[in-house]
Amino acid sequence: MPRNPNQKLKLLYLLKILQERTDDEHAITLAQILEALSGYGITAERKSIYDDLEALRVYGVDVEMRKEKNYEYYIANRSFELPELKLLVDAVQSSKFITHKKSNELIKKVEGLASVHQARQLQRQVFVQNRVKTMNESIYYNVDQIHNAISQGVKVSFLYFEWAVSFTTKERIKKRPKRGGERYAISPWALTWDDENYYMIGYDSESKKIKHYRVDKMQSIELTDEKRDGQRVFQKFDMAQYSKMTFGMYGGDEEEVKLRFHNNLIGVVVDRFGKDVFLSQDGNDGFTISVKVMASPQFFAWVFGLGEDVRILSPPGVVKQFKKHAKKVMKQYKDK
Image 1 (cartoon, rainbow, N blue to C red):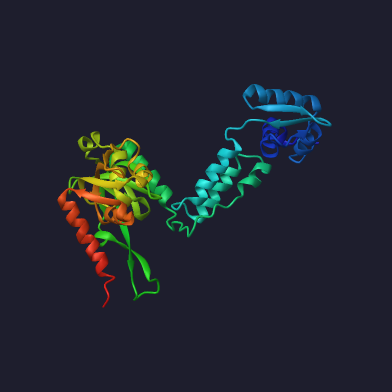
Image 2: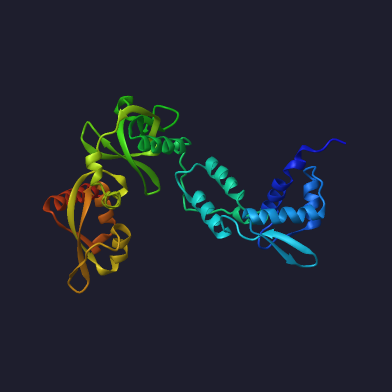
């Protein structure tokens, strides 16, 4: 009778069986191991299995034995603990930038890091109110391309899109290329995550400014042969500070703004600017801070949303911009 080619792979199949079928709460007997091996066309004697289990231990696999009715074997410790795998699955399911299709693919791969029993606990659903998943499947490859460009120190060329309304076509919401379809050429220096979106932070040689681009709106990314610019600028660049002062990644003029908050908004301030922000007491019920921000409509909307418990004190130019912005908004609701 010809020897089964899988026979040489007995040790690997034994590891596969233990990884898939056992964990802290589920063990298998020697008889069950022999039966599982036979399913792969592998025959074995009990003594050889003992030797194989010991070989796995020497290799570093945490194979444990316990006595119930019979001696049972299981893998006690894995690279990832079950709570860690649950955290990964929850992060994937709740992430806006990962498509439904890719979410399912990633979760399936995460399940492969657990036993079949633990995998059932990973088949959970994280519900996020009105969650909108991205429709751009290429974002993962965009991120990879940008990382490659950063590591190689070269510029990237790409098309950049925006959403537009059209009542003359079947689809009323459609993507259209910015700059009339002209390709961008930007020096990439970093990737950042803000408001559930990936952004590429880069240097625009034409305007000589640091700019950011939403990765899911980038298309046809190509690495160029041209070395990237902006090294001197980025030697002094603070990514954390940039994220703090840029609201919703909307651009604007950088300004040092003094704000007055009621004490009950300290949590909001810490969430936005961190615990290191310097506070000055202002009366019995408030405090002031001075921070650098991009004076954009998004920043004004943030201030407006906090109501009467926050006030922009300076500079006068930003106060004037905020008043102008507020008047435009209020004008929409004037009685006719």
